[in-house]
Length: 227
Image (cartoon, rainbow, N blue to C red; front, side, top):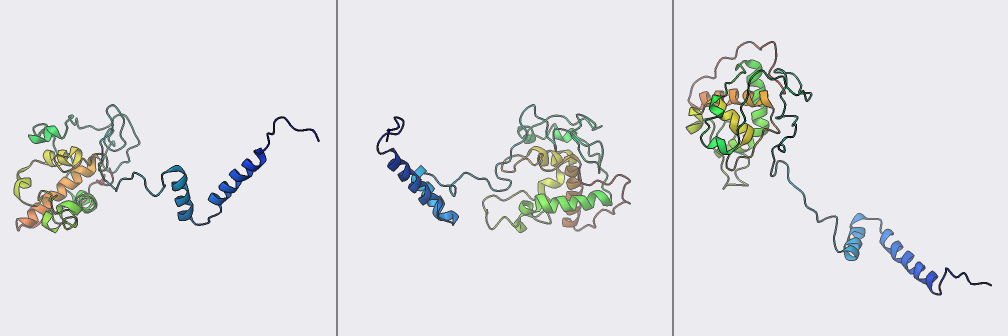
């Protein structure tokens, strides 16, 4: 029987050994044994990998990029941002978290959203969803759900103290770009929703001062929802 010059003696046995090793790795039905075997062979495991918790180390959009929530703005309250290049009537100046040390730029921004029923309802929803976990559901950080887990990271009170003296534009700016231990939320809370939250914060301040909440006007024709 002529010998195939391409097949050297012992090749079949080595191939069989590789197949047996592969079979030993594949046979285990459960994920954990297979993952353990892979870790022994390759030195790493799928169970050990870099991951981030929700809202951990949030970053603002890259320089020059077009952000869905903060790079472009919807054409009006209650309208969905479809990525249009322009449309916002108000001229919002550029500022960073470093600028919030004085708030000089943010203080110039005028609140364009009336504190009507639609804005306050949306503001309460967004405040509860995005802000209450650190600042407390009533603007008191001592009641914040996150405090027992992170007692060293106490947020500033929003219902009293210095926040009462801050302008609407300053609170808007803090939501957009953050400062200190507060991360920026401009990529998660869109333009009109920031103002809805500002309006609701004023209601919390009135309640904390012992006054009745500002009477809500009739809902506007363009509800301040979602954008």
